[in-house]
Picture 1 (cartoon, one colour):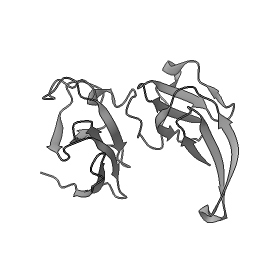
Picture 2 (cartoon, one colour; picture 1 turned 90 degrees about the vertical axis):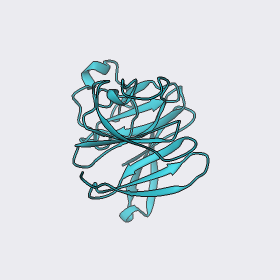
Picture 3 (cartoon, one colour; picture 1 turned 45 degrees about the vertical axis):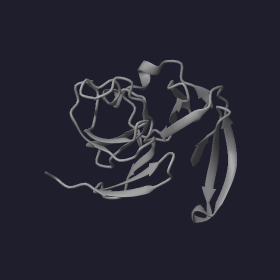
Length: 180
C-alpha cells in the first residue's frame, strides 16, 4: 500500500502490484487542509500527516477516518519520521541554541537506526540531532548550506549519507556523516 497526501487535504491510498509496476487507487481519506508531510505506522494501521498550518493529524487507514484521540497515538511506532511536527521531534522547534527565534522547520528525516534526526529549515540550515529529539535544549550539529529554504532532507540506506535539496535554487547535495 502506498499513500499520497494532496493539496486538497485528502490522502489517496493505492495498492501496489507487479513488483511496483502497477498501482490501483483503492481508497481516499478526506481531509480539509493541504498536506505537507506523511508517515505510515509500522503496522500499517495509521497515517500521520502535517498540514500547511503545521497541524499534526492522525488517521485510521482501515476505517478511513481521523483519529479522535491524538494522545493515544503518542506511543505508535512509525515506519519513517518525515513529519516535521510530533511528539518525538518537538526539540527541533524553538530550540534554545538556535541563533534566530523564528525558525520554521521545513523538512526532517529520522535515520533507519532510530538514533539521528536530520532537520532543514526555511533559512537554509541543516541540523543533525540525536533521536528522539524532545527537548528545546537538544544539542545539534549545524551547517548553513543554502541561501534560501532547505526543501528536503533524507537519510540514505545505511544512515551514513544524507541527501538535501534546496527550495529556491533546486540544488542537490550529498553529505557523508562521519564521527568526530
